Image (cartoon, rainbow, N blue to C red; front, top):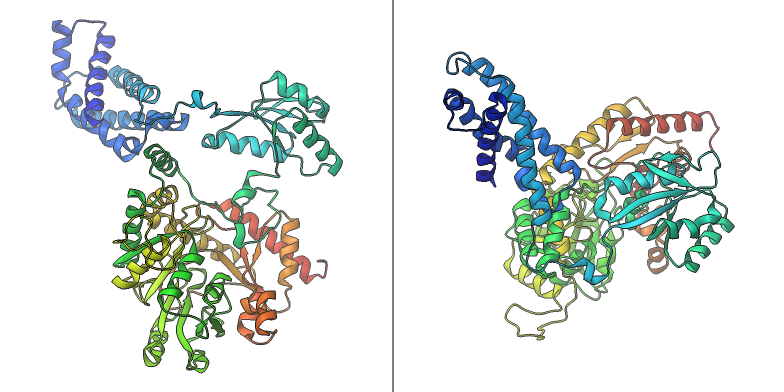
Length: 637
């Protein structure tokens, strides 16, 4: 590709000279004279053009999947290169090396380069094929489905905008349908607005609609039922949704809260064209499980954690479960852990019929308090499961000292803390084994997925066997050495993870920037305190952005009022020991772990993701400030 671009750049210069001199014979003496005189410009051009294309990522793109944005970026790269050529030639070459230079050549060369280099990419887009390409026409599957959006209000307009900005979804907005007579006949987002709603069937037929999206969150229940009935009778696929942001809003860990009318998602994965292209390549390979992508993902995870081994699995819960099994924990055993965590860090202990023994947290770091661990150890204690909460490492040295004294295994739940460092050491391999998870609201994502890391060869081999139904590497086909599980990560998930891991440092740095912007702007609110980064945390890995309210502020009321203002927030966490199942089974009650309970009653997570803009942070700040003012004035509730 680089050689082709060099040759095309050379051709652009020659063609530009022909146009400039109106001479179309390269053997003409006038042409030959000018071409010899501009040789420094020519040499510089064939160097600069590929360099600019390389550093703007043009050689990393798969042009068969290119979008309009890719071609605009290509043109921008060429124009930027032409500008540098102009500056260098004007001030460095003229008049020392090029006594006479036709300045119009700059413009002509740039235009011709765009045509030739862009034309090459267009040709690649329409002609590139891989072995095993799917003939979509033969399958009967329409890769670009035309969508009618019912409702031309803010919800519908936002859906149309998001579909246009994400062509990979495969849905193309075709038109709107609305009952508002002021809107019917108008256009928005470049789409016609038809109406009224009773013409739904006619519009679907006339405009060859493949799918209907109903986006009228304020509609009466009967109206929604009527629309759905009409869709079923046509028949046509019908989806009812408030906005596409709801699909990336927090997920299973975060509960079901209203999505912001301001379109501020609670969290959002940072997905680029590279991840999408990686998934497409896996689909074309036909190898969808435990292949090259999984192996590369494991290699990159091990390198990131500075571990000897990494093993990819389906999710963080399965990763923790395998750690409990590898530790030999079973019926009657006890595992010390924190009650201030997502529930899977305790559930994984119950899966092996052992008992979680909770130890309260340090109120500053919000991690398990090492000074309280020893008092919880009994003759049945087998391990300490440490959770690095919110991406901040727990105080590991005293924990390791206690574990060594009592011959206990230390397992790290680093599902929220990839890349975090404790006193310069990466979390995950400080204990016997560690786990990372990659749900969409995490620092990086694989969609669903997780990884175990360890420096222990025996544990690593056991993890690989357990995730694959108990098969050892020397077992024959369908032979199984032990009881195992189907905890394998798919190649599709691993492919996303490979790209994300290569971008991880950048992702983490962007989250640091967002967190610092939050810290700065919220410092004026006296009733809130951000998470304290303790001295032993030499690298924070921001999972969520949480603030803690001072006494007298009703956290739950803040959540309600923020939702009314269009800002999603979440309570972090309801302590595990107060979850209904744990209270019923173990008899836990309020007051058992006061620091965890105090944190659970006063902490909320604010909207937070890698690409959050300063303007969005300001919106959150203003809403929170107004809510706190109203609560102090006694107007909330």
